Figure 1 (cartoon, rainbow, N blue to C red):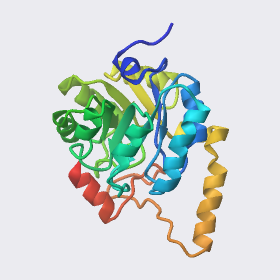
Figure 2 (cartoon, rainbow, N blue to C red):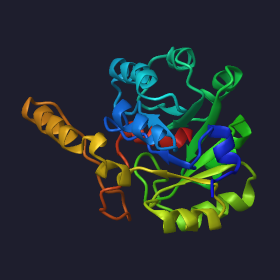
Figure 3 (tube, rainbow, N blue to C red):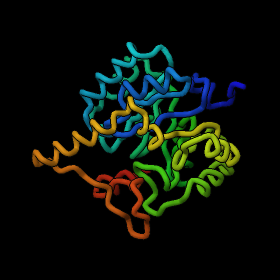
Length: 252
């Protein structure tokens, strides 16, 4: 039986699963495969390699005729023309993250795009809804990327946000299979975002990414590793630290 809810209708997909915008991994090969399978592939910007990312967005038109999206990770995007570029490529769905939802929501909405903002807290969710987003990606502490400095599990955060706000929600953090998807729906979500689970796909090319990281270290480049936060676990889903992360959390 096909899915039909607000997320599938807004995204134009058959299956309410969104592939997470993992830096360097969420490129055209992976995103197009996800879209072709009936879910929604996303192109990342968190690598900060905007020229390469723009090429990947262009490639999507040759790889799929299905809907796909772009994530604008505000802490890493310094190009003020990113909105115009995304619109010009015919992208219809954008997630914004790592910054204030007030920065890009209005111009994206005025251009006719559907906008979801990634939130790690109820306060962030309320701010995003006030900014006019169409929906939320509610990310618990199990997820990667920028989050609440004090982890709140998806099982706690998701039903809290769903009980307070009426917008469509995509659950993120710990989503990996049918049972976790069913649990997210029971807690108020209408879609899920999967990241780490997608890395196992051959088209994600994780070995190439790790080889690249090793080359950068060998060539003397600093490759940041996510440091543990006070009171947080040392699991590999930790958020990036440093001044940039602190600014992003403050803005959210």
